[in-house]
Length: 267
Image (cartoon, rainbow, N blue to C red; front, side, top):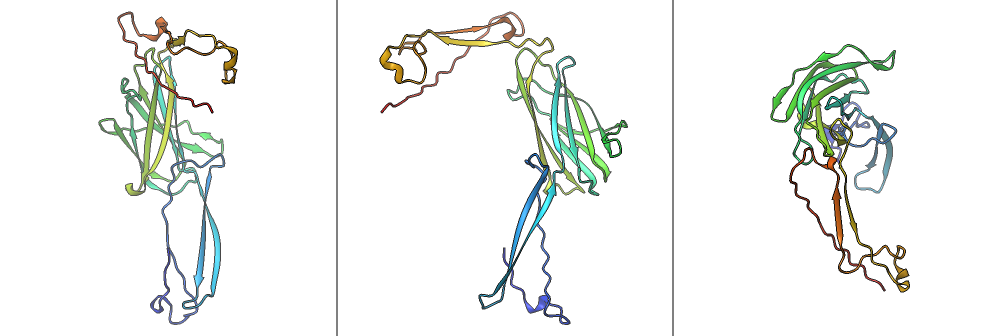
């Protein structure tokens, strides 16, 4: 970005001084690293018009992490807890809006059923969240749940509880929350969270095993990475097994297999 200072930009009473002000937008989402801060370096060069004379200045602006999203699963109650923490620097944000997509798991099998949501503020003296919980009623459109928190000046925590009909199959839930304030949706912040290994409350996850009948390699094959007996022939015999915990109930099931071919060239 460059700008040419014109005569009209100067104060007639002090033409030797020029003040240029410009602003940029900061994305408060994404990774802030372990430090919780992100630095934005900036260099400015002032060049005297028509000459090679110039002056340079460098400054860094440090932006603190605004918040984060986390998720956890309780197998006993089959409840997912999503938390959205925001406004760590404690800015005066006005009305804050949080839009959350409570979607199905990654395979599209298991939906989330919204139970309730509440917000808490942070007690800086005790360094923990205050016990007082204010319940919020979202505006619902399909899977989208939109919450509004008025007059935000403190660090806050939004907790969203959902129910899932988890079964013996291990599932994954991904969740995105978008946060903006003062109705300025153009500059919304994206916060992401994932929950892995969501399954039923009995703690039993089925396993599927696949093995191939080994064919002994001869001594001349020692150039390969593995040892003798760990290779299969060009006509392998595959065996697949699944225990009873793999399925939710007795019945007839399909088992699918995918073959991946790897061609290795030896020089």
